[in-house]
Length: 260
Image (cartoon, rainbow, N blue to C red; front, side, top):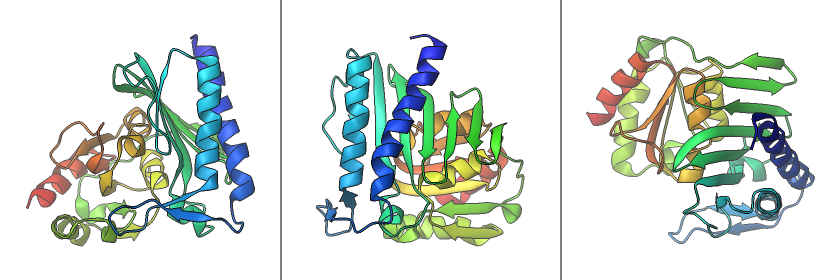
């Protein structure tokens, strides 16, 4: 796979997913709750159709590659190269007609994400990174993504999808950080992490994430100069409790508060 082939293929994956999803957006959708724990974890026909379309394209183009996705069973997960797909990250926003959602695509090699993409077809935005650089493409043009400096939590902007998604003990830890920052806002899912990479916010703190929620975002954030870890300062690849920061100083201070 050459660099030119790879870039073209990822763009084709994004285009296929967007073409599949957009006819469903802001329409009367059938919604299924796939939660087994009494909560609300929605999935729509758009989620499944987009992942199926991306899987078909990957299998046709790179049959030796593995695939890990949110909506269907893993395929060849032991392969050297594995594609990680979340067709609609932010399904709750999607079903509410809000644009804070996106398609997440990552390519991993031996378990390490080497390329990540967040594609928002409704706003026609494309956030991509390979861990060493990250770029934005959309109506505002084509530019490099860079996180911003933030040495003090008192100057920081914090995003999370919702503290209500956290367990009670984790909410208490999160509350300590929230009280220390200048501004805290809820909602965003994958879009929040891209705003961090673009230098508009300083921290994203979440819990209960799955690998397909975070793996595509790691190369974007790291390529923009930020960092992503677990609350224990470990590798974020498996998901769980995640903190992303644009500045190592904000990350260190927020970690102190999360640990109490």
